[in-house]
Length: 220
Image (cartoon, rainbow, N blue to C red):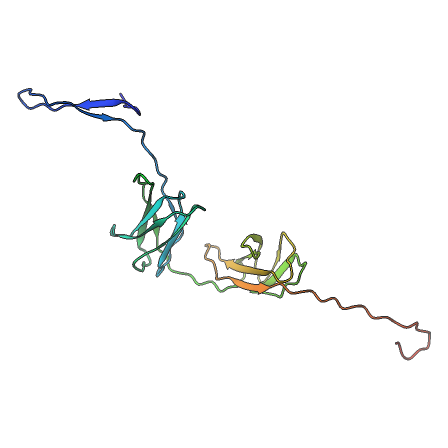
């Protein structure tokens, strides 16, 4: 037999002589399942933990000894950024749970702290208005990702063996717009952003040629 939501159950206790207590009653409630949050890969020395959860819920972070080291609210976009009160070390396992407004708590999500890999940011060759390709340099085999001024990805491509990349973008860039580029290695480690402002493309008028005649030694 399984109890069900809304059912009222009762309990009594008896002593060894058969004397019975008064009844205690309780109403069965539906079990609220709170999904566990995600944790973005943490790195040694990080002072913030980020990830995703359900908007409005509280995410609580614990160190590998079970001590709470930070908590914060999941934003309207479903992401959280939590300041923690101690640095974390390579190999340490941290956990995170999320709680809803009624105190229902998820199972724990876990992540192991990794060594921080430093990826150099790529270079960006000067882009001009109307360009639909962005070029520059990076580390061979890495992926370069290009973003527009609003932070939207507009293209990505691989750095060639010569250390150069050419990335097709899905929209022409505009004069004065600031675009950014990052590069990622095969493990997803991401560089800081490189930024550059799109310049006006100068048009040089073609010259005129006065009518030349055979035998002329000068062209004007």
